[in-house]
Length: 68
Image 1: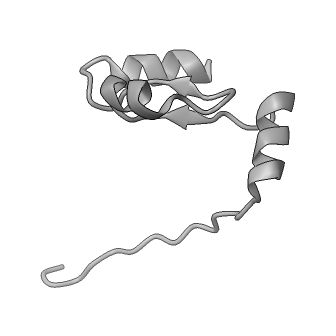
Image 2 (image 1 turned 180 degrees about the vertical axis):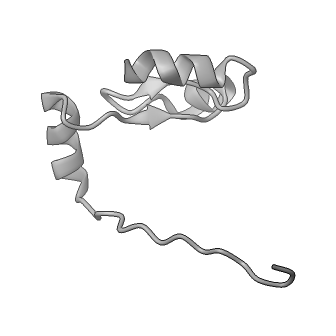
């Protein structure tokens, strides 16, 4: 089909920061910090977040390990 596009829409829940912190603490939510290590050093990593840089070749395997 030339010229057509397929668009998928997903409902993304919006949660408050306090609710997200509670969910991370209880294990209901996985919080990832996918910035570069230099950015983590500059501003720190959020409490409970997994620092896993999307800029490394091992990103996919690290993400899989976290989710398992």
